[in-house]
Image (cartoon, rainbow, N blue to C red; front, side, top):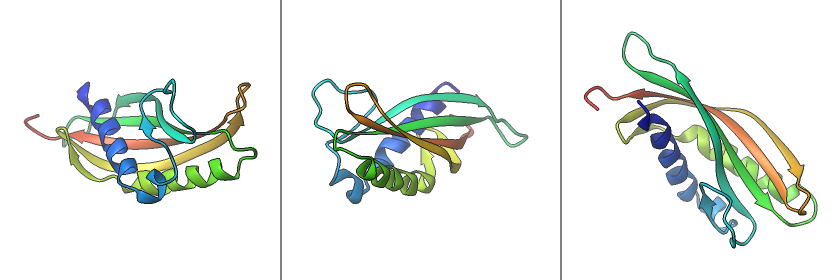
Length: 135
């Protein structure tokens, strides 16, 4: 079930890109820190997947981090963008790439300023998925 993590990533990118309030503010949504992208932007960070199988099928629990990056002084805009991410992610549902999304729950967030002057906000989520039988 190694494709479960990629299915979650694809679902997250699609959900974030579908949110006009977010995409109207950021320059893009990426799976790594881009070299020349204009701030602010969103990146999908590391994730940890563990077994969450049940009697009804093979499943995974994913711990996913999503970062918001900005260079505007203060933390207000980063916190506003994090709030948007936190509003969008729990709404992922349905099927994608052979996996059914069971739940998506916000766990925590934090905001920090990096030595280069950029502000980073990170939101962590727990997403549960189940492989669709036959995939």
